[in-house]
Length: 582
Image (cartoon, rainbow, N blue to C red; front, side, top):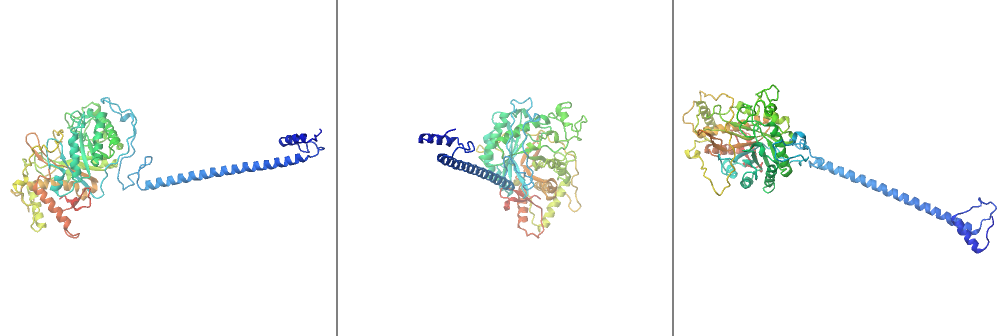
C-alpha cells in the first residue's frame, strides 16, 4: 500500500491516523511518518489525561457518597439519643408514650384501642360510630404522694346543699379542699342541663383554689338512650371549656352506681359498656384533661330488686349471671359485667355511706361497716381496682345524722365517754363545748337570684338495706347521760366515719386516694331528715379547727390527741391543707 508525499496528502493522512491510528505492526515495511508520531503522542497523552480525569471524578463521587452515609448515620444516632433522653425524662412521644408505672409507680390508662365489633353502639342509638378512630392519650389526674384528696359535693339537685359556695366550705372548715363536685343532668339540646350554671360553678371552684372539679353526669330521665353521639360531643365541648377557660382538670363520674336498681340506667350491662366507650371516645378527643371515673355501688345486698333491676330471662340478667348457674345472686360478680375495660377507665370509685344499723337511728359506725364497703366478701371494690391497676377513691361518701331520729342509749354513752376522754387529755379544756341552740339552726334555703340555679337531678328513691352490726354498748365508767347534746352526737358520728375511711391503717389496706364528702341535708318521704353536712354543725367546726390547730402546734415528741390526715390541695405543703379527722 503506497503513501502520499504531498503536504495536502500528508495532512489528510495525519488526520486519518489521528482517528484511526495504524501502527507499524499493521505494515512492518511502512515507515513511520513524523506526523503519525506526533499524532500518536498527542492521542496517548489525551487518553491518559482522559483516564485520569475519569478516575478522579469517580473517586470524588465515592467520597461524597461516603460523606453522605456518615452524615445520615450521625443524624440517626443523634435522633435516637434525643428520643432516649426525652423518654428517660418521662416525656411522652406519639410513637413511644411514657409508661406511667415507671414514673412513680402510678397507674394510668394504656394505649387506646380502635373500635371493634364489641365496642360499637347498639341498635337503640340514633347515630353510628363505625369510623375507626383512636382517641388521643388522656392526661388523667394522678394520686398525690402527700395524702388523700379531700373535697365535697356542695351543688346539685333540689336538696339542701351546704354551704352556699366552695369558698364558704373552705372557710368554715379552715382548710383548702382539693376539689368540689356537682351532680348534673344530661340534656338532649345542650349536652348537660343549664351549662351556664355549670360554668358559673366552675368559676366558684377555681376561686376556692381547688385542684380539680368533679361532675357526676346522670343520663336522666331518659336513661342510656339519651347518650347519642351529638349529646356526647356537646358534653365533651363543655368539659373542654372547663379544662381550658377555667384551667380546671375534671373528674367525670358517668352514670354511677350502674349495678344498683335505683336509676334508669341500672343493670343494663351490655348497653352500659357500649355507651361508656362511646362517651369516653368523645371526651378524650375533645377534653383529654378530663379523668373518667367508673364508680359502681358497693354490693351490700346485690343484686337487690326493684323496677330498674334486670328481669330474669333477659339478656341483661344472663350477662349478670357470671357463674352461669341460671340465677343472679350474691355468688355472682357485682362489678365485672358492667366494666367497660381498662383502656376506657382512668379511676375506679365507690359510694360509701353510713346510715346507721337501723334506718332512722343515730348510731356510731364500726370498722366492720367500713370494711363492708371496701372489702366486701361478695365483691371487694379495692381488690377490683388493684386487679386493673387503677387509682381508687370514694367519690361519694358521708355519715347520716337524723335530727328527728332515735338515739340509742349506747350511742349516748359512747359519745359521753369520748367527751370525757378529750377533757382529760386537754387538761379540762373541752375542744367540743356544748353548742348553743343557734349553732344547729338550719340554714335558710331561700333562693338567691344573684346565684346560679343548680340543675335539678334525680334523687335515689331508697337506699339498699345494710347488714346489721352490733351497736356500741354502754360502759360502767361512762353511763349514758341524758344531757349529751345532739350536736355532739352528730359530730361524733361523722368524725368516726371519716376516721374509718381515712386513718393510716385503713389507707394502707385500701390505697384510698380521694374522698368526696356528701355535703347535703335531705328530707325523705314521710318527713325523715338525713343530715350529712359537716359545715352546718358548730360543734363539729370548733372541734375540727381546735384539734387541727393543736396537732400542728405540738412538738414532735408530744402526745397526740388524734391522728393527723393530710388533705391535699393546690398548696399541699401549706398549714391550711392539714386537717385532723378524729
